Image (cartoon, rainbow, N blue to C red; front, side):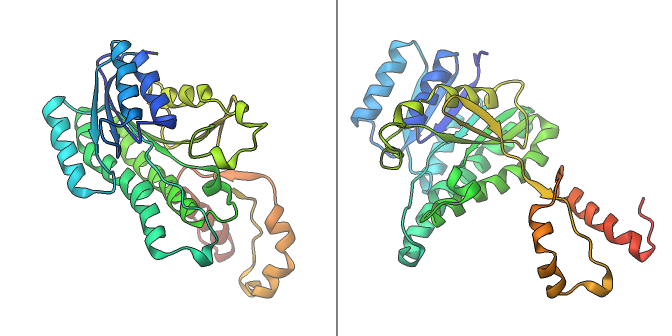
Amino acid sequence: MRFDNQSALISGAASGLGRAYALALAERGARLFLVDTLQREAPEVHGLLRALTSAGASATYLCVDVSDEGGLCTLFADIERLTGGIDLLVNNAGIHTHGAFEHLTPIEFHRQLQVDLCGSFALTHGLWRGMMDRGYGRIVMTTGVSALYGDLHQSAFACAKMALVGLVNGLAAEGLPRNVMVNSLCPLAHTQMTEAHLAPQVKPLFSKEIITAALLFLLGPKAPCGRHLLAAGGSVSELCIGEHSHRYFDSDSRTPEAIAAHWGEIASAWPIHKHASGEDQILAWARRTAHEQGIKLE
């Protein structure tokens, strides 16, 4: 899989997975626009640019905080001046707010949202029209297992990352007809961000290779749309957002006591049904109750 003649923008590119993404895309021919908050003279940035130059890659580094609207306006102007548009967007920039909810401050909470959620929104929004007009684009949002499944002391992080799942679901429906594929990737690798959260004996298990492979797939010509992939420890899987089989309540038994009495079967009912869209779920609800009301739905 090659990305020759394509431009890729990676946020949070100076270290960790962002650095790995940059090197992987450069190896396959992409022109890179690298965004991070570190100054160009920082050792991480200098080392990355030196590695890319040695590999013969075309890379432009831009020191921008994705939560800074003014900085992003300058970023978009620079990109417009340097290239005909961005084909591939990797929303990788993020922070990790950890701590008990009772001690979480509004400033910390909003900062988490500003970087992870609003930063991803702003970059995507700024590049969206160009991708739609050209009829091609690939966008990847970065989520996290603590958002998808919940973890202790991760409320701010989980809120920001789970919101990105909803953003993917909404944008996928708009982008698909114009070949703008929007997906999410939930990675786990041994990086500076996860250093304190992985036991020493498992750190070697979480290398970056399978994550970069999944990322490149989601940026490639055969990328799906509106999907949520998990990649870690050599495996790739898809998150399924589904609905357990329902328990229907007749109109004369719709009480909290009735729900409590049947909670065991509601909470563990099988099979699980996937819905293609929110509209599909609404239609399923309507069909279930229409029969009792004697209403025929087309």
